[in-house]
Every structure is written in structure tokens, then in C-alpha cells.
Image (tube, rainbow, N blue to C red; front, side):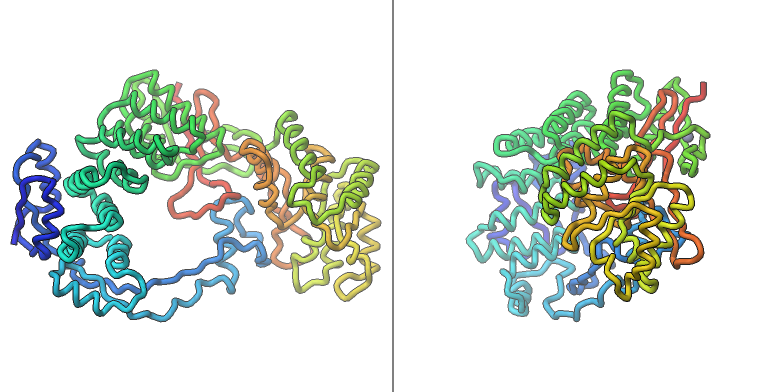
Length: 582
Ligand SMILES: [Zn+2]
């Protein structure tokens, strides 16, 4: 059975009068979309339902698979020398997989709710399904959320709305309507999006942001894309639009060749201190392909510098777009390749040396000033340290010559649980001292009291080979570690397994946070032995900075691989190397 109606206004009636929309042999939604494009919107519209494909006929069993995964595992001690670098993309994930206690938890037992329909139902069938529904939630709301979660065909959702409307004098709640819109947008059913848009406009004076956001996304691919810009203006009246709203509008403008609007929106987005989505940046590069326009090229290079300044990395497909764009610029002869950087900081592709990880004197001074003042001001993270103890520590540090290595004694001593703590610490300290390094060990007072874990003779040997500062047992070590290392100068390294993310988060602005991360990568020594053998092995500190960079006739761009999950404190290991044949 096919159902016809003449005006969009009568759409709600559809649900009121025709609770069941049968499966007909008519057109697919896709063909409606194409017809709309050819301007026959004012003609009668024929609604028919897509035949359910064989894959869809199988009902989806709604068993939520509660998956649980620990975000990270700093506590794992199974570190081996084959292990990826502490800051390398994917390292945290691998660390967590190596820990047997970190396996995904068993799935929760199946709960019998109802099966999602795979094709449109009639009133009686919906009534029956509602009766079977055992959940506590409102049935209509629950079922539409499931339809969204399982990307069901919109025909099923439409039959649900028709059933609801039939029982409700033709009224479908705003909530249900917006959720239906969500499904239409997902399936790119543009003509349906238009219809829901018209209903919403007719029925409500203003829309809230979630509906506007969906409509923007639904409209940008169509010839009515400019209406998305109006919706964006509506959002602006009440709040700052999201990066997604801007991103969608920019993509809509680029799809319709309106470059000026796209760049203006982009400027506006940055003006609100929003970080654009990578796909938005990618869209600019994709559009720029084969375009001979110096102004446009200049703006794309500015986008790359934006990535640099904000320590952002493109994803794999974006990196491909960047490569394709460079190679397409007429007359410039760029050649790109995907590569890695050698340990000495040389690009395996072109042999050029990547920028150093070391902070410039100005950068170092800025970071030192910010962190030291933070320690002294005693922000929240330093509450466990008393002002008296901090003063005692400052005096201690001022009276020592600068150190080469600062060791977080407690943290290092616990790296090998099967070995006595004082023995581990002595081993590490002895090795550093033999290399003629001036070592500072930060510890707690309890470490100097004889016990099974802390032998007095071993601790005395530690004190002979290194300067030691033992804080009260309640103190936190990190502030002391940061203070002593930074105070010693740019050459000084530190050893801890801790990733110091709390400190990074406490820094006042993004620029200082990036400096901190760069400094940390260049100064943190990690022990990578799996077992405490004859020698302690330290992880190689990268000599180069993983950041977008250029020399004018070359670009080196680190990027994220699609299949590697990178945590915020890790950096990518893959690079795009671009250079000009001159
Ligand atoms: Zn290169």
C-alpha cells in the first residue's frame, strides 16, 4: 500500500489517519532525494517503504554488551625492553593489555526485553510489542532510542510515529520527532529531513539546539544548505555554536563552492576559542585539490601552522588529504611519503633532521617560572605538603650544586615487586653515580627506618652516592621532584614511573601545558627492564619533537593511525614527509 499526500503540512495527518504504512514496491527514499534535486518538490509526493533487505530481516537482539576497559595502567610492572616508548602512541593500550587483571570483564547475563522490529509494524503489532515490554522506561521513548542505536531503517521508526500519532490525535511529541529526525539524518534521507523541518517550523516558534544541530547536519548536503546557516544564526542567539555546528556549515559551504563563507565561519569558530574538528580541516584540503589559488594555498599552510601551535595531529585519512593536496598544487612539484623518524631524529624518508625536543632558553625559563610559582603558591595539588617542609626543601636545594638526575626514590624502589625496595634503589643510584652523575634521591622518612623492605646498610650506601632529601611521610613527592629538576637546569633529568598528568592539568594555559609535555618527554627517564638484572636499562629519550614542522621547502607532519588508540600523553610514531623537487 502506498500513501500519498499533497502538502507538507499534512504530514502529521499521515500518522493520525494511517497508522499502518504497508510495504510497497514504490520508489526508494534515495530516488526521492534525487527528484527533489530536480525541483519537483511541489508535486505530489509518493511515500513508500523500502523493502527490507535480507540482512535487516533478522531481528536484532537487544542485549547490551557492557564492556569494561581500564583507561590506562600505570601500575603494570611488566615492562620489557621490546616495549614501545612511554610516550609512543598505543603504548598505554599495550601496557593495559599485558596486565592479565585488565581483561574485559565478562558480559552481563542476557536480559530479556523485546526484539527490535526489523520492518514496519501495524497498530496491533505495536500494541502487542508494548504489552511485551517489561522495562520501566516509557515504551515509545525506549524503542526509538533503540532504533537509533541500531541504525534501524527509518520505515520502522515511521510506523512507530504513525502508531503514536493515531493514538494521540495526530500529535507526536517534540522529543519523538527530534529522535526520528536523528535517524533520518543518519541515513541521509534528505526529503524526510525537509518534511520534519517543515513540521517543526510550523509547530514550534523556536527550536532548541539539539534539533537545530540535527537539521544543520541534515540540510548541508542539499540545495537548501543556506538554511543551515540561518539555523546557525538561531543557535548564536542563545549560545556559542559547537565546533560540530560550525564544521557542518563549513562543509556545506565547501560542498557548494562558497569558499568565502567557509573561511569566514572558520575564523568565527577560532574566534570563540573552539578547537575545530579534524574533518573540518580535512574538508578545506580536499576542496583545495587542483585549485590554483595562492590565497587559498596560503590559508591551508596557516592551518598546518595552527596544528603545530596547538600540538594537534591529523588522522590517517586527513594526512592522505594533505599529501594529495600538496602533490596537486600546480607547478610546485611536491612529493610526499609516509615514513618514520629514526632514533637520532633523522627522517627515514628524506634524511632531514627533525626539530629538537630541547626547550629554548626562553621556553625553559617560562616553564620553570610557572611551575616553581605553582609549587610555592601551593595550589590544590600541593596541599599534602606543609609550608615548613617546603621551606626546608628549598633551603636544601639552594645549598646543593645543580643535579644531573633527580630520582623519585619511593616510586623507583617499587618498580620490581619481587626485589627488596632498598636494593632496587641502591642498584639504580650506584649505576648513575658510576656514570659520574650528580644524583638527588627524593624519599620519605620511613625509608631510613630499618625494616624488611628498607635495609639500613643499603640506605646508607645510597646516601653515600647521592644527595638525599627525606620528606615527611604524608608529603607528596611530585612537587619536590619538579622543583628540584627544574631548579637544576635544562640538562637535568628525572626518574619516575609517574606520568605527572595531574601537574600538567593544573598548569594555567594550553601553551604552558604543551611546554610541560615537551619538557617531560625530553627529561623523563624511564626504566625499561622487565627484571632487575645486572644492569638497569633506561629508555632512550627522543632527541626530536613530535610536532608539525616546516623548513619552507619541506614539511614533516606526525599523524595518528586509524587503528592505534593514542592517549593524550602519547605522541604519534608515523610521519608524512613532504618535500619539493627543486
Ligand atoms: Zn622527510
